[in-house]
Amino acid sequence: ETGVTQSPTHLIKTRGQQVTLRCSSQSGHNTVSWYQQALGQGPQFIFQYYREEENGRGNFPPRFSGLQFPNYSSELNVNALELDDSALYLCASSLSPLAGASYNEQFFGPGTRLTVL
Amino acid sequence: DQQVKQNSPSLSVQEGRISILNCDYTNSMFDYFLWYKKYPAEGPTFLISISSIKDKNEDGRFTVFLNKSAKHLSLHIVPSQPGDSAVYFCAAENNAGNMLTFGGGTRLMVKP
Image 1 (cartoon, rainbow over the protein chains, first blue to last red):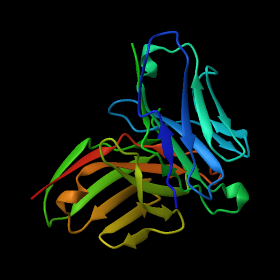
Image 2 (image 1 turned 90 degrees about the horizontal axis):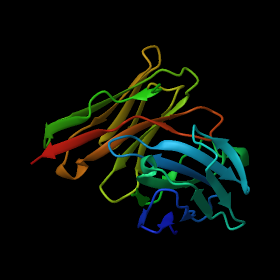
Image 3 (image 1 turned 120 degrees about the vertical axis):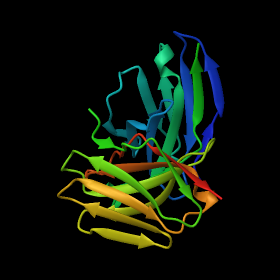
Image 4 (image 1 turned 180 degrees about the horizontal axis):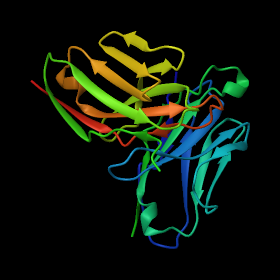
């Protein structure tokens, strides 16, 4: 069984640039969620994708967008980067309650550390 | 506003003793609670969970207690081991099932 993988591991960008982060789901999982973890804080929910559509969104502006592909892998795109976007970005995969799972037990990847200068 | 709070940023415990990590929540719609452990340079790893219809769930050295009336849960680790040293996050979910709300984390240090 393959776990959740994320790429790249680290990334440095400058203000105003755009970034794409990638995530491969754990085998058998059909749902991907993205979280932002700022230094010293808990992860904050960005959004979730199920069946290639957004299935819930946290309090993040529209410049945070995502995609889910037919193989359930996912991308997180952030446009017009700001200094406060510097954080660890975590991807989590799960089996959706909509597909019969009891609860959305999520399995996390190692994260991508984004630094915005 | 923080719907899930872990008021102790850090906890230090002697090896072999009990570790108790606490978590409070405000949203009464939460009905499923989870604890995650996180080592540096790794993603959070699921540890144990509890449904709101229970008040206790046990898995080996780990026990989670839920007090719904107080909106409080705790994680007990007995006996604590040096390998348990990590950051512990509690998280909550409602039955819509599409997001976890995390607390800020507690760094546990277990001293040999």
